[in-house]
Length: 124
Picture 1 (cartoon, helix red, strand yellow):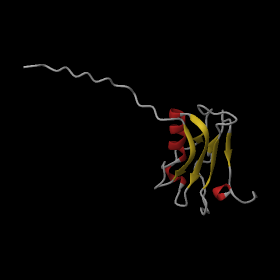
Picture 2 (tube, one colour):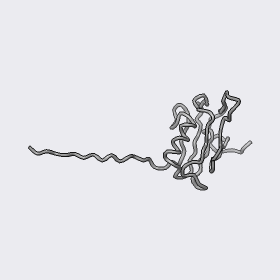
Picture 3 (cartoon, rainbow, N blue to C red):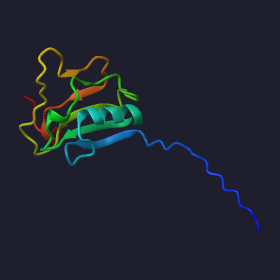
Picture 4 (spheres, rainbow, N blue to C red):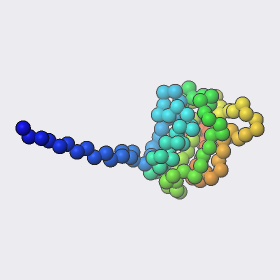
């Protein structure tokens, strides 16, 4: 009887660096901004990435302060933008803690917050 030896090589899977548009909300790509930023840090930025808050986003799922650190892979070309999705309105990012920041941008570079839904229209 012949014996077979099967060798399995475990090679960690690494997803491609992030770019394009991803959504944040209960049915989005990420449940929270915090989760999206953590994923960016693991996968890095490979181009411009837009994180859009969908119309059902609520900030009660966040861990405060929401910290935007120096992003892995960020550059003048590999930027990160946070904005509401087209059609989304009345979105708030609020924390009940008045002694700490709601959003901490310490170390953040090549990051923008765009309040225009879908990135269109004029700013206020």
